[in-house]
Amino acid sequence: MKPPTFDSLSVGDEIPSLKTPAVSRHTLALYCGASGDHNPIHVDLDFAKSSGLDDVIAHGMLSTGYLGRMLTNWVPQSAIKSWKNRFSAMTQIGDSVTCSGKIIEKFEDGGEKFIRLELQTNTECVQTIIAEAVVVLE
Amino acid sequence: MIDKNLIGYQFQAVTLTVEEGRLKFLAKALGETGEIYTNPDAAKAAGLPGLLAPPTFPFILEIDALDLVDFMELLGESLENLLHGEENFNYYAPIYAGDKITVSKVITDIIDKKEGALQFVKSDNTFTNQKGIVVAETHTNYVFRK
Image: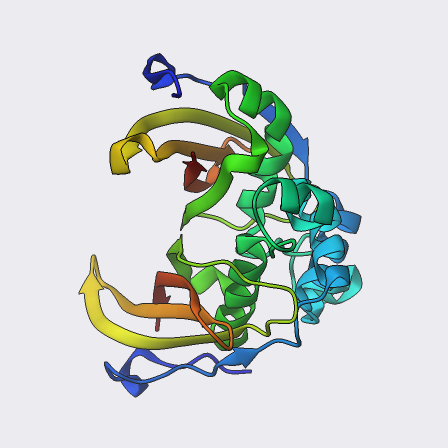
């Protein structure tokens, strides 16, 4: 796949979005093992209840991982220079995660061309991550 | 309350090998099917030294470098109260399977919010590969609820 060029993009453009299947307990078990984030709040219902929750909650970084997939589907990974993620709400079992992004700035610095993106993840009910990334393009 | 004297606390640096199997497992957990993330032969055919670690991988190294239970003990906090507030990345060079990455972590700030109902513990992490190249930096904000 050919990456987009700087000149072909405009502020306000949306990048191709990504929607995941519903997050299941199995999804969280896999991510617990693969990520090494063994916090039981994501996989142990008893622990989640003792923390005052009704059920286990998804790892915030699972949704960040999905956002990363959306980015690397769009540009080569080496184009990503920085990426800031703020977790604003919890993702619950059964939620599917929709990742989206739009261009908010084009700028040049030191002879290189950069695009600033506003990114977010949303479940059916709520925005779960607000993020910003800077990518370098030809 | 978390002891503010921990601001500036430098954790012991840890060197970790990036395992190919781990990258495959992570790709599976994220639903990533791209060949440079999942197929070592395809990654090599694409001119890479091995599987490419995905953009969130520095965070995975952060987790591996720091046992959460030990971290809670240091802070005098409990996991039940922990939420992930922010995770920010700066990228300087790729990470591949087989790399040896040294993770160094420092607590940069401890902030009370909402009259102590929330506390933020901020940390900076630096990732240096076996060639001495800083490949990434992350900034993590841990949130503790009361």
